[in-house]
Image (tube, rainbow, N blue to C red; front, side):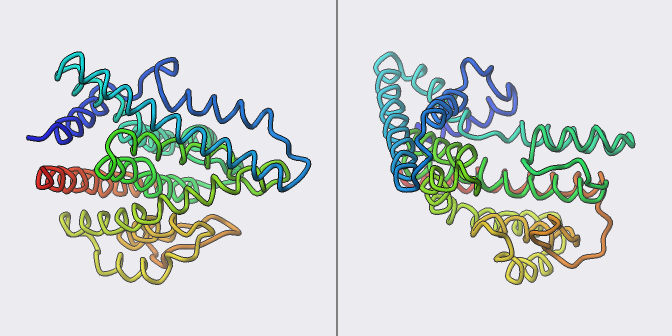
Length: 309
């Protein structure tokens, strides 16, 4: 078994057993602090200056993260093979967050099951979405949770492991930096319109292939549990371009079709045309599909990495 396969499997085990490390030890938190520091000092008065500054934040951050990951890998390998494998697995684990995603969606589901809509809205906005949730009814809270499960499966699980398979640990962590930069800077408001333009563009480029892989993985998972794969295909091809993002619509529309529901962000998009009720049980169904798709993804990467050696 190759070192890359062992690192991947150890990283998955660490995520399942331990979850997220404390903020003080989390590389993504430090990435966010760098981006936040850069944003605080950004010149936003002139569009060109803001764009160039934002470009610099992202490129310097990407280079630094990839370089540090490469140096750490070399240092760990010099110490001992076991140190290299465990240390690299821990660093890789910080680039994806399967257990955290499941727990966040489950927290919203529990609040809905208890009939506490206010708490469900709070948990949704705290853990999963940046939109205003204060006016969402239970159906829209469920829809937003399912959308987040599908999109975060793509961005937070499929993509970092995909880039690990291609470029090793530096690839996974560099991707995570780019995705974090987009999450912090990629807004269409006065301050961020030009400052975050490059970050948003780069994230779209990096997520282009993983988003489509994620959609097909969800369909594969649906086939394994005998869910409605045919409707998943139909809605995927019909609705994937309805979101503002060129990527988010792929896993979300596939999930909408598989579950036979309508996923709607009022005033922005509507995916699917199913009449099935959106409630806490639908969230459970989406998590089941996502879990199986995650297993398929890891197994596919293991086979690919092993065949490459």
